[in-house]
Image 1 (cartoon, rainbow, N blue to C red):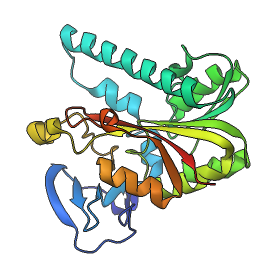
Image 2: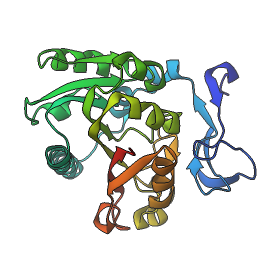
Image 3: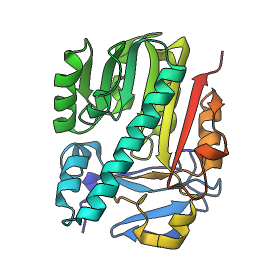
Length: 263
């Protein structure tokens, strides 16, 4: 049984309501998913941030997984390489040189193959990941901090960043709408933000059910479809710059989107 003092209850991150939620069959007790009447899928109860720093940090959960086969390791490596290549191509295409904010930066490894014309700044909830990223980013003139994004975005000031990376981040964030709203003020007028999230609308999720790779209880607290992702960024006053059919293929487990603040 989970101590209630270590759990945070929350309303729907998209519409801020909690009425008429339908409990879904996807769960890992005591964690569950519900579908709001606005169609957004989320966890109504989540671990408090202090637990996310250590108990449910990505590197701890990853190391606790069962030993995987060589075949799976190869697939994972290839997928990781393709993700970095996709991110790099979008970053080079849309973001001017300068300071880049990476929210959910992890260890900072994604910047290993990115041009030094970009100065990385990062935020991560994991103490170990933020420490590793800070060591990497400082060498390039930036820094990384360990804190909830909602608490530290304003410390960077207004009109600072040439771009932002939210890759594999929004599905973890307890308050994704608030982060998107606050992020706008740290971005320059010509800046873009790159988003990548699991695609809850994918065919694979419907086939795999509870074993779908997009489910990671309890750290994947939000599940986006193309429609709900569009709604959230629009409500946060962003313009969608790139989000075509090939960015959210129903056969893909992930979605990519590029946005910029509306002027």
